Length: 479
Figure 1: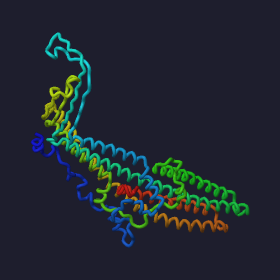
Figure 2: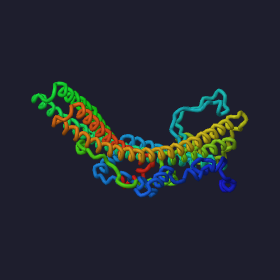
Figure 3: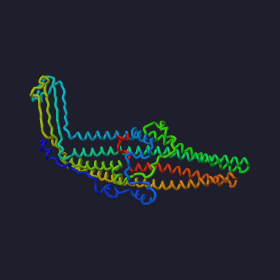
Figure 4: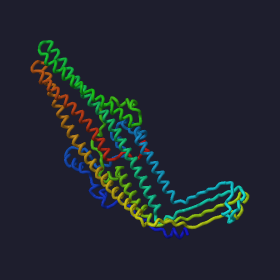
């Protein structure tokens, strides 16, 4: 009978999953080269373009060639609490997958135990008779196997497998965010250190201006107003230092917690960093095809769509009967009759159960599953669009900040020349202090803007790598 039922088995009910042709990821434009890369290569002319279509390496943070950053990322990938939580969730989903797959195998149950008493006389067809008390026993076992005639179990296993793959993609997504978050925190520490260095340089220059104005006042060559203006400017510059120190300390605390350490145990070896990490030369970014394959959130959404599609088959199978093969055996009698032939019983045969779909419940569940699939497709499309938008935005932001930094560098150099000349003229008494003060203010602002641009470049570069979705590949090697 089992062989006959197995021979009748057909393709599981419900749709077989494939990536829908109407999905945005299936459109040629989604896999095309990035518009930002093509635009920069077209305008670069005689200079090197900031991007190349070379593949993004698995461990992009190693492009910085910074041993401290490598060590911090490795620590974060090994100890980060968000990553540990995601890994635990994956293990739970994998256990559920094993549980679902167990429905393909037979189930075995046994029960039994001794008892003392007697049955009723009526049950023996002897009214008024009270049987004597005695020790009795009962023992039975049952072996059953569900014939997956319409593929409900196979669809459930397919859905559980897709859910497990989506959970793995979720772990990879956390790895991307952890690696990028660690690199961003490290870059912020170093960039804030650079901004502090620029601010402190401006403070030192202004202190020199204060000393000069005081000497000129003492010599009767300048009034008290010049000294007051110089001291006011000095206090203004001192005020910009304190928030930068707080910002750097906050980045250090964040770096500590990202690597699984207490905030007060932040890495002291990077606390004095003043050189933001930056990949020199062109940044490899690949193309749309590589992005669609690499971004874990896209893979997660695609696997959730596959899971939702398989759930349609699980719901559709409820329209049809379920058939199980059962074998049971047992022994029941008085203890003194244990193991006698007349105490044994057994049976074998199929069990057919069918909730006839006349109340619309099964059809409603199918409609729910189909609606969930349409929602999963919309989410998949949205995830792809978001990934492409984030990447193009990050490419453009980084390219424009490179242009801004070059302009700020030129402006800073010009303002430094002006400030130096203004200070010389003031020292020689050929001009008033207002000119020198204004030149110093402009120079301080230029220094601060240039340092801030360096910080923004470091952050934009990490955000670009984050948008590209790398960093999860080769988890064993990264650890």
